[in-house]
Image 1 (cartoon, rainbow, N blue to C red):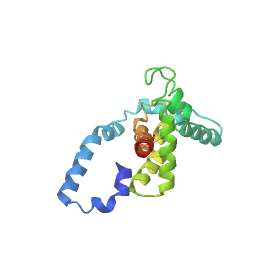
Image 2 (cartoon, helix red, strand yellow):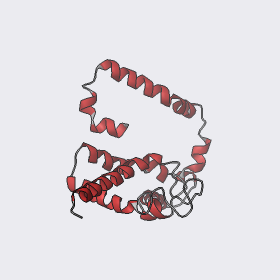
Image 3 (cartoon, rainbow, N blue to C red):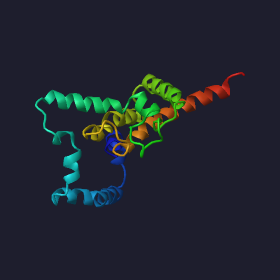
Image 4 (cartoon, one colour):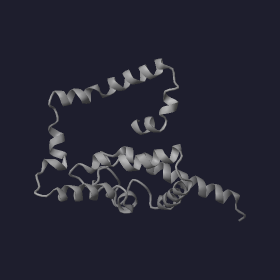
Length: 174
């Protein structure tokens, strides 16, 4: 939501103030239990899952671990072949996407890179940049329960690639 707000802030501020106020109040009501849990000191699970809860001598360890976890979110092995390793999250020996989707993913990624920056592509780039961060700060390498929003930009990329290839096939002479 923050990423969409950043991209479309000009359009958002054109909306009537009444709608902005209602949206703000609704958002605050939705996140109020989370904020209250921080004030009440109910963050026990957070301290056990955080990578920073386990002291290390070197800050390089933290940087290396976080980068490793971050880039694992983009691995073909994670997305298409093995998943996150937890059998409760994905089917055995399968990622959240089918191996066939890899073709659409590569084509879609090529297309959005070639198109440059526009509203849609900026949204995808920012999502790919920021959405893996929370999961990267935990002790597990990749956990699709902690990064379900990561599926949004990857699905958009796959959809762009599939749409392009199906349109090409429709217009080709076979």
